[in-house]
Length: 425
Image 1 (cartoon, rainbow, N blue to C red):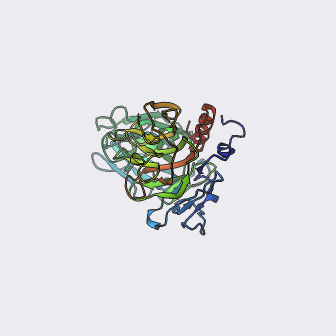
Image 2: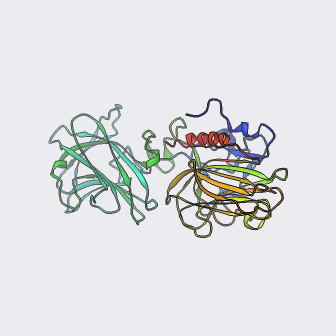
Image 3: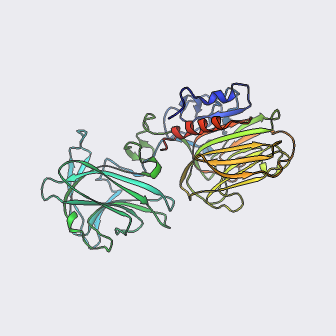
């Protein structure tokens, strides 16, 4: 559990230089860079985010098309309460389609459940694009129909029409509503995934147990580490339940041109640094700068960077660099994207040591010389290198930069705070 009374503001109680950005606090978000138009809802662009550390190091973006977007979407499906919509295809591998029995009363009293009667080798499915390798959790409430009920239901997520081995969950049905969950790798090497209900087995043949009437309600498809979140209604990409009490807020960076930056932050009084970031990396393509002090930390004394990608190799994982006149690289191999992580980069120039943690686990340590001097007075770039290259493709839930050495208890308390912000298990 979160330590009672912990607040990241305490990290700056002794006038430590730095910044704290919290996208879940809508009062700190503005649609314009001048900070005159507040962000009032999800899916609005963020042109300015205020620094909550008390140091006044606010971050902004002057170009409207280059602004990240405030989002709270977790359910990857659309039209989750409108099975009749064309996004839900109804078909069969040998022709025909399940019979649509119309809307029925759902457990919450609404008419958002749907009745289908499945014949041999038929299915209802939604196809969507997502990075290969997603560890996901698919859920749906189901029960047997009143007339000619099926005795079982299959739910699958795959990149083909069939129920391949390991991609399918089969559950027995009664007239009582039950939540059926299917977890696993949702894609292997393709740019699409199906969430499908029906009667097709692994060979493409019919599963007789699933023939008959089935009622479906509240379908959901989320990353596996967000499986504990409640069902999220999604109509379209910009129309969904964004209740902050249920779903974590984040800034969505598109990997193309989205970026924020501050004015110069003066870290010249310290040779110690701690950086925390709560992020979801959606792609392993290229080097993606999540945060960088200075225009090019690789060639600027007293700088740091935190990036998605294993530095020079671009392999799945995280990269760090930090130091004085010399800045050793940190390479932290991790799971392939998409991946949710709470990252911590800690550096001590005079002590010649840096470390990189992901979700509380040490990923890399550098003990070679860090050179001399202090950290720099320079802009902090968020989501890119200098707003021009190495754009981040993913979600930013929190970013804290503290120009000081942090104790293990401070590191762990801050990591836990961010983890809870992200609703991670």
